[in-house]
Structures are given as C-alpha cells and as structure tokens.
Image 1 (cartoon, rainbow, N blue to C red):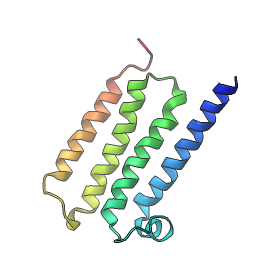
Image 2 (cartoon, one colour):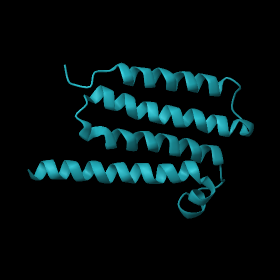
Image 3 (cartoon, rainbow, N blue to C red):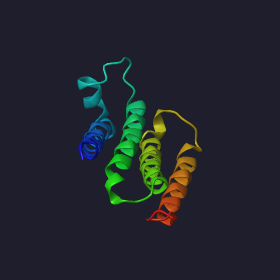
Image 4 (cartoon, one colour):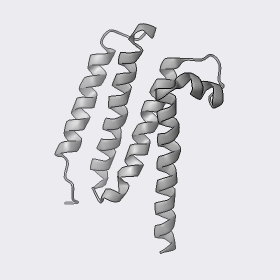
Length: 124
C-alpha cells in the first residue's frame, strides 16, 4: 500500500513538474527565461522546443492511471511532444531551421497520433 501511494504521488508530482514549466516555456518563453532559465543567450525557439518535450513527458505521466498499456501511454506522450514540437517550428519558422522541418515534424506527429489511436487500450 505504501509503495502504491508513493508511485501515485511521484507520478502526480512528476506530471506537474514537467507539464507546468513545459506549458510556461512554450506559451511564454521570455517570461520563462527571465524567471527560470537564465542561460544566455535567450533563444525563443529553444524554449518552445523544451516546452514541447516537457509537455510530452507530463502527458505520459498524467495518462498512467488510465490503465492503458505502456506502449499506448508512450505513444500518447510522444504524440503530444511531436505535435507541440511541430507547432513550435511553425511559430518560429522565421528564426531559422529548414523549409522541410514543419511538414516533416507534422508528418511524424500525425503518425504518432495514428499509432496511439490504433494501439490497444487493454493489455493483450
């Protein structure tokens, strides 16, 4: 029982510790930089990307109590990260990168979303 409570608590704290700063870094990168990430130089796109991947980890931790099998939870977390990452590149397209970044990342996100949707919801 203690182990179960510890696991639940660690999962909830972990989900919050990743998702809240991840959303902050993605939605308000300048504020996140000024308050948390004081590593010069400021790079809006880098903070957007960090937010994307932290949101993916937070999503995976938040989905754990659904009872879904691990592969589906992992796919949902990866799909979250990939989708927000594609949005990050679309928002920041004028800051650099390659012309093919947005379509390639969107294709990856779509594939992960499809795989998550098609994956079993119950262990086999």
